[in-house]
Length: 390
Picture 1 (tube, rainbow, N blue to C red):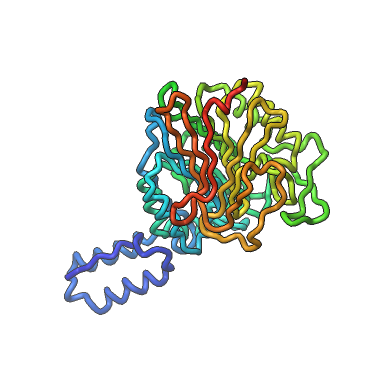
Picture 2: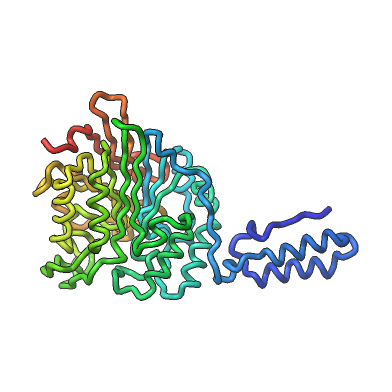
């Protein structure tokens, strides 16, 4: 009996190992296999993808496309995946049957200027059964953070950013000819649902254009301090103009995905608060464009919390931070944050959820952080009317 083993199903075994396997079969089983059997084995050798040796990237095409005409009621999100570690939380996420899942960055830990190494690490992620199941059953959108961009805390100074962007887009199945394929930066946006139940998801790129950060005396969260330099950008001029156009689009609820925290206090970590003029510019543009319903989703910290600010904003801006999907925060305690909306933080594996009840006269929005078993650990319930200028 001939058993055909597809090369793609063998995960990240090296090309040489696969070649040896098939060669042995050809050597010792020629009479039993016959011509067709030997030909099949030979095709197995030929079809071994070059990504197995780190030379190219095999992607998992997301066969499930978001139904933009249908209202969203359950949006899940997360960040920070070590591609070499187990990811049981992804099975939990799949079992929740969300309408959409958002990857907010550090989707692999590439940390390299070697693009072959970066491709190989994406390929490693692709071999995980939970990741494959998620990608093949749930609509997905994604942006990046520093580690999948290419280097820890990197910004516009990262030398391989253009090449890294194309590898990112290949991995997430971005079609040819889209705006993302033809412009610098991986920012993106979509609107889901009919009038009265529209959710806009805006994904920012906080890496490609970001200027230099200012360092000071190291604190618990890291070495960074708020910058007094007025011209250092977070998003770059082109992305700011694009964001203005997106904020003018009609939507009832707007989720802005930022790979790093926006509202949280600067405590040494990477955060919009390190560029306070850029942070205020974001809040001003939300107000100036009359954009109601904004909630910020963020990651990066390897722990979870909910922040809120009412200072110089037209309504309270909440920032729900979820991180990490498969890493435990080693310190186990949070940094200072005067904007923390709830006293509890969570430092084990987690993912975030936005649950929307459109049937209420004033739609109800649940902001949640859930643990690896799917139990809420942090939760805040809002009414949509609370996210509007009064």
